[in-house]
Length: 122
Length: 110
Image (cartoon, rainbow over the protein chains, first blue to last red):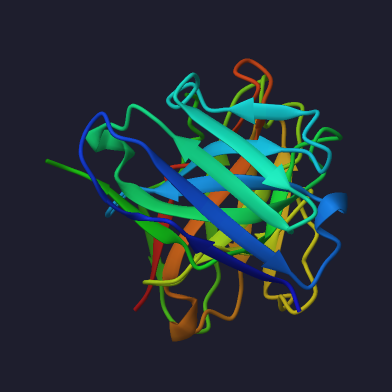
């Protein structure tokens, strides 16, 4: 059974940094692209970033480009999101998900974690 | 970032059929597959439809997807109160090299 468990969320001041983690199990992690999607309170889904299984094909949303960095450790079946220069508008639940068809055609996200809440506020 | 256009809300009676539209452009839906997601209140999104019209295992055939030109449609037949949720379409956009989602449609089963 595929399981994705996010962690690392919390309350952080504007301008601060935070690192989210996503622990994966139940599938061959290195064979699958992964992605981060966020959802601000009461708002819709916003894609944040995605990376291929070997980390050689990575993309970011314009809203986080230059501030966020996605990475993965295939030996630990873990996905990360390093978030710097955080703003109030980054407040959201952050989900990690498995991304199928990444780099081939429009990717879709077939397994999701339960999410971790990041609150940026002074 | 580009956003796909969905109606904010739709409603129908139990047992009826409803469709949810997703309008895009030539840089996204016009050339890429569309996926659909369901999000029940307080839970993570769940994949409903991928590659325009394919259903993952476990998704009943009451749910269907189609695409024509730069628009896509999600259809749900035999509506149940348990179908009340937010529904999102998504695809890739070549102009921004990013995944984009629609704003979401809240389904109410009256």
